[in-house]
Amino acid sequence: EAQVTQNPRYLITVTGKKLTVTCSQNMNHEYMSWYRQDPGLGLRQIYYSMNVEVTDKGDVPEGYKVSRKEKRNFPLILESPSPNQTSLYFCASSFGGTDTEAFFGQGTRLTVV
Amino acid sequence: AQKVTQAQTEISVVEKEDVTLDCVYETRDTTYYLFWYKQPPSGELVFLIRRNSFDEQNEISGRYSWNFQKSTSSFNFTITASQVVDSAVYFCALSEARTGNQFYFGTGTSLTVIP
Image (cartoon, rainbow over the protein chains, first blue to last red):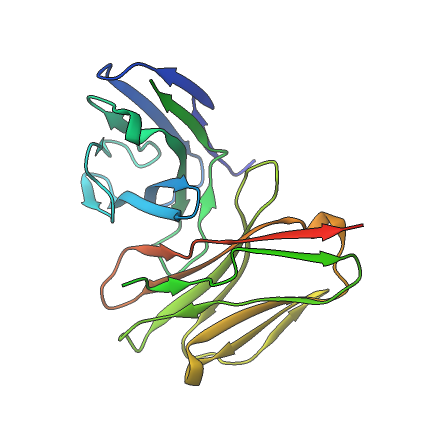
């Protein structure tokens, strides 16, 4: 089954404790991206990647890191999480780029206390 | 400036009513792509439609229809004879060919269909 898998689905952590949210897709998509969803703000793009070893900042990259060492994986790293990073996070992938539909993961609900 | 504006934050309709969700976009690119996604209460994001800037034909898919008007920079979404299962948050999104590689989402419209 074609899918984008995020883990964990739910995470509560403390300020400053490094964490990684994993994202994996099995569709051989070149384009992958991370979003955060906050009430009243919709989805905002954090980082995206056009292919292996090619990543770039979206609209809200501060406080996040990503890597793309393999085509299928695109982890989101929070080196020192803060409460303002409490949000619902989505990973997405698409074939080729932003001219095609994106397939989204199920979301990760992150709470930073 | 917001590239995608969904001015309707929340809409409530009674079942079987028609409802239109508005989406206004802003771009200087001549080649761009517009999308609609649905987020039901379960939380996942579901793709509904993609349109490119050269295709202004309206599209109908069952009870769903989309009206793309470049003259008003709008890409509105109409649900005919709404059903309770249509209750969801709906997002409009834009990507631009020239500037590459980002998606811009609107803030979403929360639709509640009352039985």
